[in-house]
Length: 552
Image 1 (tube, rainbow, N blue to C red):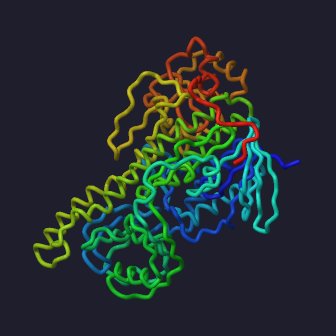
Image 2 (cartoon, rainbow, N blue to C red; image 1 turned 135 degrees about the vertical axis):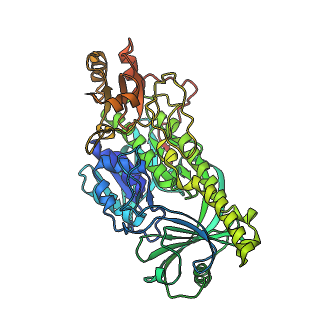
Image 3 (cartoon, rainbow, N blue to C red; image 1 turned 180 degrees about the vertical axis):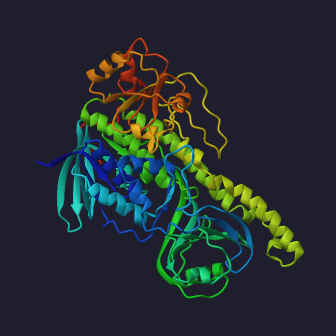
């Protein structure tokens, strides 16, 4: 007989690791397999957004991330310039990680933690959890799906194969996802925005070689427009140099890459190239996220330009949304349509973030169309041209630097497991985020006491915040209990929280999103519980995808 696991996860990048950890944190076993050995030679991301850090706080990982090897004293300025030895056009100053404080809307701040630092933190966490089995050098070969579960064939690096039965399979296996391809899910959008080449190099005296103040990201602009970027990948002596390219595929040799790095410096210097990786910026969204017993998440479901740091952070949001819903199904209290809400909630968010990332890329490379040759000329005329260009570019790039609305302001307005309250959706400007407890929104953060946020109340199950203790909520508690739905009632006596949450009763889901709010319980509390657990959703036009014995 094959071994059995409630959830089988293909892919142990940050999204797959987060899903396995979140499931274990909720009391659900999983097996997570990864075809590689987990070594990261080219960190694909280096910023954990505030929502990802809120998850890390929930899981007890906030301090581990904060203490990562990234240099906490390295300034995070973003700079656009001709070269490190040439003209500087503009600069957006940001504090060092040590100096930066959380925004008023969150108990945590974003953290600079590249993937080769973040993945090991997640890996150690998952390996410490008895309910998670992490297997590297193991790949998912194939799977068959029935109405009752999935049977998968796994193969180790040595060639031995194993059959595993699972209640659910999740493909967190990246842009070339085996799971997505087996399900014949198409990716819609633009397969190639730019063909880019990344080079990681080391230079120990980098900041002594030019006159530019330290920063995190440098955008190099020449007569042809924006042609490369450079990032202080660890804040010490490693740097990621990216040749932006265009829609045409081009393979650069190490000598060509080296010459371009020298051009960015503005003079020859000594450095060591550690790795070179060509890649493609994409604008792609899966036509669906799976159904029945098999789902996809992270890069398997959406691919975007890294401009804005939305890719991995969007995937982390996927993992938390899917995690509590899988746990609900396995623990027996999730309704038959709960998992269908995963796509209904997450796909529109991915579409929004993909478009915003492309918009940021367009702004970054816009000098190709709007650059004046005068900005490279010496003298007063050149100075004036540089001032005009620099000011305009600086103002335009603020859309990429100030993204709290994108990271925290995403909403599930059309979710079938959210109960709308009839209020209008907020219309925040792109760079501003105003907290709201409107159903479908992230439950707002308020400091209830020193070190204790409202967000610390959420995660394990449903939470009913009661701002008027005299209200009898026993009918809701009984309805939840009858279906095994985890529900905790918490009385809040806090003026600022009461004002922000508006209503006297606010029901918050395990992922920290508001599911319902009102000043009194509905007459049919059982119907409310059925709705939020996915048992009162009727999708008449939804056709079953699973066929007994179907093989992928």
